[in-house]
Image (cartoon, rainbow, N blue to C red; front, side, top):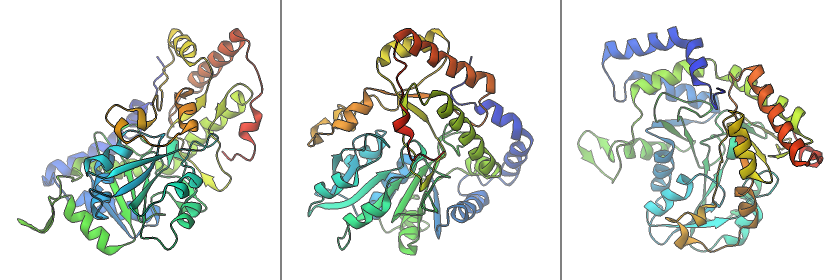
Length: 379
C-alpha cells in the first residue's frame, strides 16, 4: 500500500533522537509547559522571524485564542474564505460572531482580496486569510483593503508553516498568525498541537494568559480563557523534527515538481505565484468525473483525499450564515482531489500514482493540455 503521508518512515529516520528527547521529559517530569515548550517557542519564533511564539494545544485553539485576543465577539463580523477547513469559520461562530464567507480565486484557490473589499462593513473586526495547501494569499492587497480601518488580519497557516510570501515566512506576516502541528502537517507532532505568532508584545502576553484559563499568575484569572496548553512531550517531538524540517521542505518540493512535470498536460493544479514558496502540505489537482477517478484510484490501491468536498457555507452547522454567491468555491469543491505526498514518498510509489492518472485519462479520452494553469508558476 502507498501511504498518503508516510509518518512511519520519518520516525525511523529520527527514532533514536526522538527517544532521547522523550526520555529527557520523562526524567524531569514537567509534562505541562515544561522547558521544552519555551525552547520550542524560541526556535519557532526565530525560524519565522516573528518576535513572539506561543505554543498551544491545537491549530483550532490557536485560531480561537487569536480571535479572543482581538476581542472578537457577538455583533462582530469576521471575513473568511468559503473554501477552507471547517475550523476557519467554526471558531468565529463559537464566539457568537458572524463569519462572512467570500469567494476564492479559481487558479490559486486562495481568498480573493477583491471579494474581501466588497464585504468589509462597519462590523468587520478581522479577516482570516487562509494559506491553503501550503501557499500564502496576497497579504499586501488584503492590507491595502483594510488601510485606515480598525480591522486585524489573522493568518490561518495550519498548512503553510515553512512557506514564504515575498521573502517573509508564513506565520510572520499578519497581526496574529496561527499554525497546526497535527501529525500530517508539514511540521507535525505525535498528537495535537499548534502555535500563535505575533510581533505585538501585549497580544503575546494575552495569548499566554488565554492558554491557562486566563491566568496572569497562579489562581488569579483576569480574563476568561481555555485550557490551551501545548504538552511538553509534543514540544520535544517538534524540537527534533524541526532539525530536519528544511531538508524535508526541499524533498516535498522535489516530489511536487515531479508531479507537475509529468501531469501538467493532464490535470489542473494550484497555481503557485512567483513571489511565493510553498511546503505543499497537499498536492491537489482538479479533475472532472471525480467520482469515477476516486473509484479508479481505489481499484489501483492508491489513496486519495478530498480537501474539501463542501464550501463552508454549505456545511449544515454553518449554513445559517450563508450570504454570498461563491462560484469558484463551488467549482473547486466539486473537482479537487489530493494525491499522496510527503518527504518520504518512494520514487516507485510516485511513479505508480502518475502512471495510474495517465491510464485513467487515457481510458476517459481526455488528454487535453492544461499548460496554461502552470504559466508563471514557481515550484
